[in-house]
Length: 64
Image (cartoon, rainbow, N blue to C red; front, side):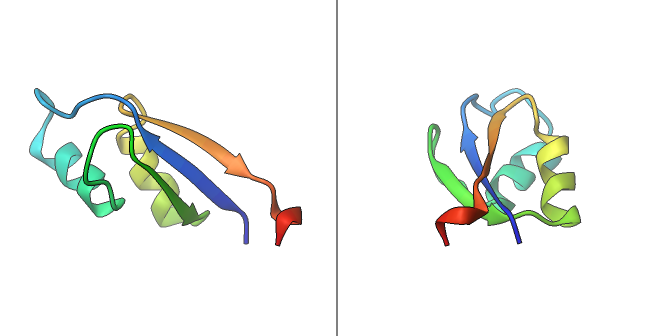
């Protein structure tokens, strides 16, 4: 299954509690941190909710 590289690039200060919880649920602890997640409908929905706070790249499967 393809993976996504998600980088938290903008602070969640001033945004709703739900968006802050989504950032935490994606596994972020600090700004500019990068996490890799499997591409799934659940993860894509979470990324869509905070798309203004994160950068997303799709990783190539051929490296595995």
